[in-house]
Length: 504
Image (cartoon, rainbow, N blue to C red; front, side, top):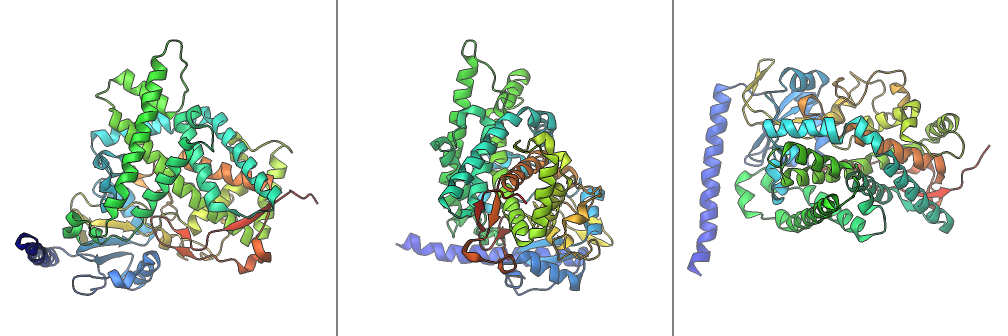
C-alpha cells in the first residue's frame, strides 16, 4: 500500500518539474526569439478553452486580431497558425525543407511501427524511397488506369445496393454507403479479387477496424497538449485503439502470406494490383530495400487515409447537390450529354465532365475534410517576416480559413462550383489559396486515387438515380452544419431516398 501511495506524489513531482522546465524554456525563447503575435491564454492551459471544439473557426477569428502568422499556446505546446495564402506560400515553398517535419499524435503511437509509416517519417532516405514508390509505381496515373476494371465492378455493386434500397422505398445513409464503397474500392485496388465480395467478412472486418481507429484518433487527447501525460494514457485512447491496429496488421499479414503462396505456385498469374507491385519491387530490389513491414504500413496508410476522407467529401458533395437542386440538375445534364445513355461512367470519362469536377473542387474548398491538413513541424529555427518559428514547433495551416477568405474568393461563404470553370486551379497545391491535399514535398501522394474515387462514386450516384430528402424535407431546411474532428464531418448525417430517373 505504501508503494501505491507514492504514485500521486511522484506524479505531482513530475508535473512540477515539467512546468518549471516549460516556463524556463518559454522565457528563454521569448527573450531570445521574436515569436509571431498571439493571445496570451490562461496559465498552464493556454488557449485550449478559447478554441473549444470548433478550432478551425476559433483560430480563424483570432487571426483577424493577431494576423495570418500567429502563435497560440495549447496546454504546454506552442502552435504557429497560418491563416493566409501568402503565409502558406512561405511554408510550402520558401521554407518547405525547414518545415518538413511531422508531429505525431499520441493515439497514433499505439500502432506498431508508426514511426516508420510514410506520413510520420522524417524526410530521410526511407521517406524519399516510399514517396517515389507511391508516385512512380502504386499510385501513378498509369497504375490506376490498369485497375479500372476492378473499380467499375465496385461501382456495379454500389448501384445494386442503391437499387435494393430504392425498390424497398428505404432512405440511405449516404455516409455509411460511401464508406463501404470506399473500403471496397481501396481493398480491390490493393488486393484485387481476394476481397471482391462486398458482403464477405474479408470486407466487413477491415471496415469496422478502420471506423474504430478513426473514432479514437479523432478523440480530444490531453496527452497531445500536455506531453508529460503521454506515459499514463489517462483517457485510455491508446489502450482502446491498439487492438484494432493489431488485428488490422494481422489481416494484412494474412493477405500478404496468401499472395506470396499464390505467387510461388506453379503457373500462377500476377493480379497486377498494388500488393503485387509492392511484392514485385521487393523481389527486384531485394527485401532490404523494401521490408515486409514497409509493405504492410504502406497498405494500411492507403487504406485508412483514403476511406474516411473520400466518405466525408462525397457526403458533403451530395449534401450540397440536394441543397441546391439547380446545381444538381446541371450535373445531371452534363452527364446525360457527355455519357452515352445506358452506359456507366468510366474513369476515362471524368476529364470530359468539367462541371462535376468543379462541384468536387468547390466541395473541397467549402467543406475541407482536414481543416488544418496534416500539421507540419519546424526542423530548425525558421525566420519569416521578422518572426522566428523555433525548432520543433508545430505548424497548423488553417486551410478552412484560407478557403473562406474574401481576399482570395468571391462570395467565399456561398457554394458556387462555377468559380472553378475555365480555371487552372487544380489539386496539386500550386495555388496556395486552394490546397485540399497540402503542398510542397509533403503533399498527399494519394491525390490521383482520391480524386478518382470521389469523382467516380459521385458521378455514379447522380447518373443512375434521382434523389429526394426523407420526411418531405425541403432543400432549404437541410442541416449544413459540421462537427470538428480528424475530418470535418457533417454534424447530421445525410439521409436520402433514391428514385428512378425521370425524363422530361
